[in-house]
Image 1 (cartoon, one colour):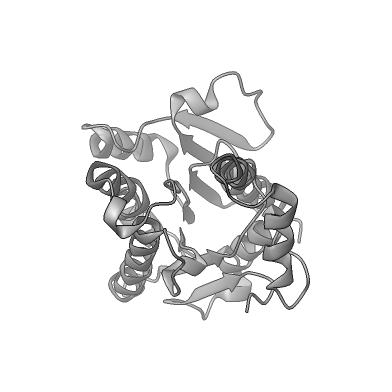
Image 2 (cartoon, rainbow, N blue to C red; image 1 turned 90 degrees about the vertical axis):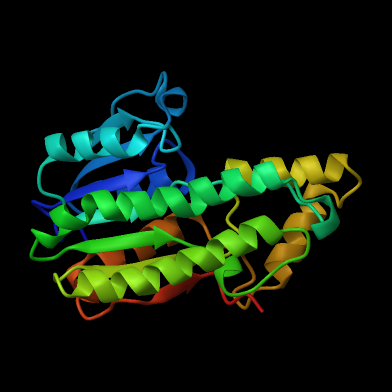
Length: 252
C-alpha cells in the first residue's frame, strides 16, 4: 500500500536488475527511500529513477567491507536491508564440480550477505522497525540435480538467517528470508536457452514443465517476490522473524 513505508530508508544489494530492482521499486512505491548497491558495470548507463539512489560497489572486492561501511555512514539511518545480491552457477554434476566456482558462489551468495548484515546491523538496531530480508530460494530447503553449489549456498543462507534473527532480535531487528521458486527473469530464460543449446528441452517445454508443477498453474513473477519483500519489510510482519517465506505458486 502506498505510504506504508513513508520516511523509511531501505538498502537493496544486487538492485541493478531482476528481483533486486523489482523489490527496490516496490519499496519506493510504498514510500521508502531506497539505495541500491550493485556492481558498477551493472549500473552503468542506467537512468536515474525517482526514490532510488544507485551505488556502485563490488561486494567481492578485497576492501568491500570497508567501502560498504563507509557508504553505510553516508546513507544514515537504515530501517530495511534486502540482501539480494547472488548468482546461479551453471548446472554441474557432483563429479564435474568446479571448486573455484564453488568458492565464488559461496562468496556472493553467503559471505556477501553475512557482510551486509554485519555492516548494517548497528544501523538497523537504531530503527524502531528494523527489518532484514535475505534472498534464499526453494533450494534452501530442497535440492535439484546438478545444482549442488547453489543448493548448498542457499541452505547456508537459511542457517545465517536463523542465527541472525536470534542475535539481532535482541536489538529489535527482525530477520527473515524469501524463498522464490522459478521466476522468469532474464537470468533464468538465458539459462534455459543455454541448457537447450547443450541438448536440453526447448525453452517452451522447459517453461511448461515448470508451470505444470505448481498449484496455481504459473510460475512466480518478479512482482510476486517484490510484494512478499514489502510484506516482510512492513509493520504487517512486525511479529515475524526467523522465518523463510516461500513464494513459488504452490510448487509440488
